[in-house]
Image (cartoon, rainbow, N blue to C red; front, side, top):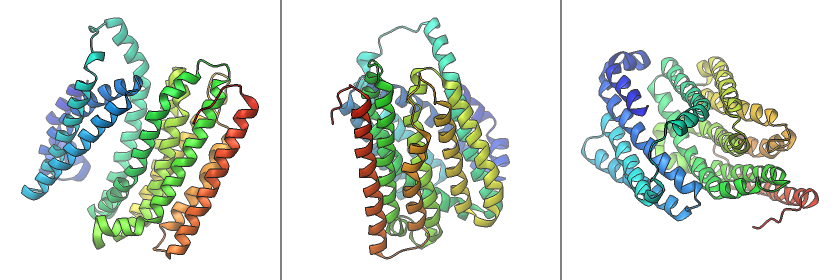
Length: 382
């Protein structure tokens, strides 16, 4: 499937690029984009196998291999000939490095011959998730294209810097989820396992929110270090992208029970509604607020998707995360992220915001532990 998409991208590279940015000079970049999809797809399959079998060390090694491979390739490109084609090729090298390492580490798992029945079942199960992912990608590209059309490449650069800085929260989220998934699937064997899973989700969301607040507190220095004065306007988008990263983390946690119940249609509906909500808000905000408006729209769309999933999971066969708790645990950290990135505040104010959110996180941890102890007989281990 990925090779087919790659071929379509290459064959239609001219019209595709001209339609997006009205510039045909970047058509050659379509080739590494397609190859990146192939390499990253193989890496995801192998790393998912490592994660499902609880091989955390091997998963970490493959992740580090991808990071080191990408970094080394980027350095070579920057020193030699920093072009769009070269940077995308560096991404291909990194993905291929991580993928090959993951395939080697998981080689004992790849023994079964292809089976048509299994493949058909996987396609049926995966199609809704693929649709959800496609909707998110379409929404993201559409928002960036709109920002480019209205405010130019400088605004897209500011948004891109904010997105890249928020990836730190995404990495933390993936790490926590990788450690939690085996426990989550094990809880399904217990009578009250869904209750404990829901409380776990609240705790993970609170922890990610605290991390996002800490990162927002040091955002002025981070933006200055990474982007220099050229991207000083990225500070406010960073706050909104932290809020979006918090929403993405919560989305992945609360949808575990949907995956188990094969309720992928809910994911597609939530992703579609989130995309539409974000685009509608972008039409209003982007002309006036530029990159900040786009970041706010992305965050809003992500949280719409979260609320749709949480509301749809208020059923006995899903991990029921109380809607009020899911929202209340995130409101204060989200507000802190936005306040901390309005401008460069004194260090004392930033420390006070982090301390306040840390206190809320500790309260949520204690409250959820008490709730589980009162309603469930499942033993919980740290």
